[in-house]
Length: 259
Ligand code: 5IU
Image (tube, rainbow, N blue to C red):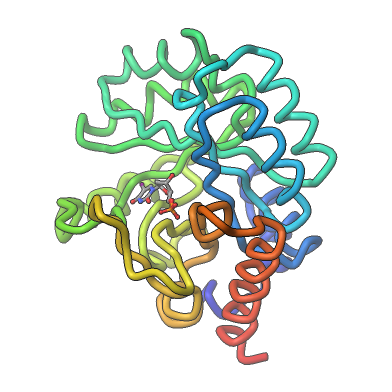
């Protein structure tokens, strides 16, 4: 199983350039931690990314919550990605027909495909959404994650719907993996990233549910933990917490390898 192989070995063998780079970063930084930076201003996002950057492999953004977004923000994010050696994942969750998502991904105010190494989509419209996004993303060397599951209470991505995500991921080269709670397949070494990870809290008032890095990485075989408020939440020192989650995620990975 890919779960038993090192990130380094998987990176060397991988055919997708984004997955290859991601595994190489994970190995270099000994980090399988992604920061979910849901802050609402440009200055907060840049300050957080600069502080926590050394400890993460992926910075996950919701660019449309930034109240003072401008193109300089993404230029500065790209500079921080280069400085600290991480990839940028815009958690856009596209969900429209192929022709519309092409416009949303490549254009508009945000021009996501120009700066985000990774983005994601629901497959609720059918496989055309992947083809539409691929027309924009493949020429730019980007990668896509499918939303095979979600972390929130009562979510509807289960059973046959999750299985369809896996089938579509396997046959579309643009797809590098999933958002979900576990490893789904041994085909093409598809990567799983898992949100809803917390060492202390059980959840929030709006349906979020937290599970531990040990459960997600060691037991379930997911590759990357995504942590937001556990790192930058009220009263926390983001650097202290990022190190804590980086160490916990990496220990869970070493346990999985049996080291
Ligand atoms: N996120 C989830 N669950 C999901 C998906 C995305 O929590 O199933 I798909 C996002 C929402 C937020 C981050 O940006 O991941 C989790 O943040 P907290 O760790 O603060 O709950």
